[in-house]
Length: 514
Image (cartoon, rainbow, N blue to C red; front, side, top):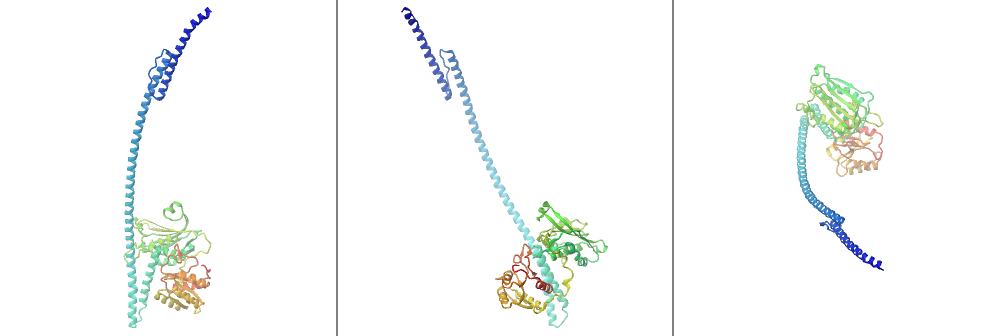
């Protein structure tokens, strides 16, 4: 009992001490928790003073950490503020630069528009200058030719009125002037690539060989003609007559460039060859790459200066004296070759002669190749008709209709005529034995193509020959006559009319949809 009491007396203080220590520890831990919570909220933490040394150390560490955290927070805020200022400055600079670029772009667009306007005005001025040169040249040459024709006809009329018979030479002079005018219109159409072409397979070697005689007569005895014809030459596809005219034009130009013909050193060389134009070169001259037939005409003449060389294909440009040339020869050659989907190139140096190279597309199809058409047959008597063959002439121009009718009657044909498509159909219905429809293309109400289509629908065996001074789309597409189309360009001679009419009548019948 005494021991129990003694233990109780001794144990109570210990319990009290333990309780006191526990309360102190609890307060210290609460203060540590409050400090940690304050650090989490970014609030400052004061040093924690407690009777417990370890707690004090932890409290001091918390206070230091709180100070460091506050410092870093302030640094971060300062950095964020600086970053915001920098971003704002960058945005302002970008906006300013964007505005500058927009202003510069608008200024550039304005300058480009001004330049385009100026270039368009310059092109228009150049076009007007070219048109002025063209019309001036046409007016000059046509006035000369009309003066020849009108003057000759006036003299013929006066001499016939006096009963004089010496009029043959004036008829020849008038005919020559009219033929020159017709040639000028053909050259203009060739230059503008509007002439109707009748392309066919051509053996250029045969063509050049067939032209040898007329070329020698054109060149004269003082110029030696040489031909260098390639073996295994490909065929080309072009209009035979126009290719011959091109070669003849080049020969005439070459002859005029070789004035010292008496020395015997003048030489004209015509060469043929197979050629391949690669994509880069073809693109530079705006043609299709591939295989071409080359026809080159080279002279030993005076050559051409670079300044003149740049203008040789221009219409009515010529270095010849006034009255000695129209200036359309080379432009006609150029127009024909381009219309044939080919290319023309001139190489020349002063004193070294000139070489004109014509590149015409290779022909891959079947069929017999044509040679030269200049074999003298045009000088023969015109082929005549018999009175049993009836030709219907349709022409809205009364004077032309009269001339065509009388010419055909002179050639031995029976002739009917009409001034319009509708009238022609009535004549066809009334006379089923008409063999040939000879019609102008450009007529009011019903053009020649529509008339022919309706006439063939009614009379499938009927043959058709078209004529016109100019046609774009009626029977010509992309510069080429429609297949199976027979065409006689105005103006035509009686010889040409006779040959064409006879050729169409003797030709095998065309399909109804030709």
